[in-house]
Structures are given as structure tokens and as C-alpha cells.
Length: 184
Image 1 (cartoon, rainbow, N blue to C red):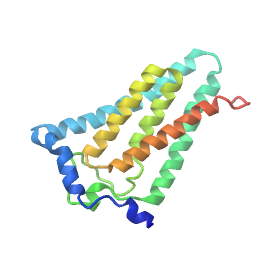
Image 2 (cartoon, helix red, strand yellow):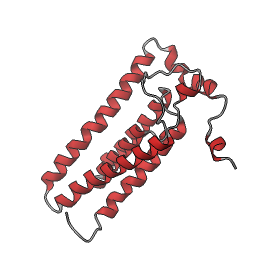
Image 3 (spheres, rainbow, N blue to C red):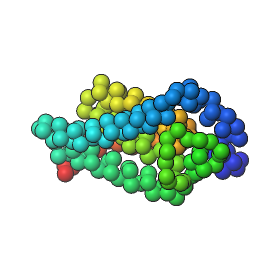
């Protein structure tokens, strides 16, 4: 089986994209609302991360190990993902197809996996490690980011699914980091 051929999106992607975005395109301000949702969700995620670090640092027991794992696991995972992503350098939907993306983006390539979704899920996993209920809420917000990125035309569904799963796998290392026999 040819792997590259298997990974190629279906030839009817423009029709698929037109179908999933038809409702947004019908609204006079649909494009602006989607762009605002993209920016707002990203801002919530990225604001939550330093708040989590500060709140965790203020708690007390084994703070250094916890805070360090919340910095090292996401940091190293982000660097590794960025390296792999740059090596893969998959094209974005608007590069391969005649579509009008709803979210404007200047860059080319580096579509797979979605770093927005990966980062959001990893932040959500840090929150989940501290408190289940907010963690689940943030994982749902991460799924919303995935949907917005596909509707925006900047990622294929496979890109955001891969970003979500890799983020969850990397985030699961937070539980392993707590079991290490040494402290930082």
C-alpha cells in the first residue's frame, strides 16, 4: 500500500468544504464570527496556561515537580512536534484545492498535525491533571478549536485529529512525570 496515496485527501474536498461551511457563508458576518471564535478560543487557552502555572506554584506540596512537569512536558513535546511537522511539511487545504478559506492565513505548509489543537489539548491535560471538571471543559474547548480550524479552511480533519491525539498522548506523560523517583 502506498502511504502517500493513502494520506491524500479525497478528490471531492472542495465540495466537502463547501458543504460544511455553507451555513457560515450564508450569514452576513459568518466569516468574522468564525475568525473571532478562532482568536477567542486560542486566547482562552493561552491565558489559562500561565494562570495554571501560578495557581499550581501557590499550592504547596511538591510544587516544584508539578510546575516543572507542566513546563517540561509541554515544552519538549511542542519542540518535537514542531520538528516532525516541519519535516512532514504537509500542504494546507487552501494550497491544494480551489477553496476560499474562511480564516485568512499567510503561511504555507506545516498543516499536519495542527499545532493549535495539539497545544490546546496539552494545556487541557495540564488542567485535567490538577482538576478533572475544568480539565474536561478545556478538552471540549480544544475540540471546538479543532472544528473551527477545519471550518476555517486552514486544516484538514486529519490534521486536527492527529493534533488532538498526539496532544492527549503527550499530556498523559504528566501522570508519568509525577511518578519519577527524583525531584527537580
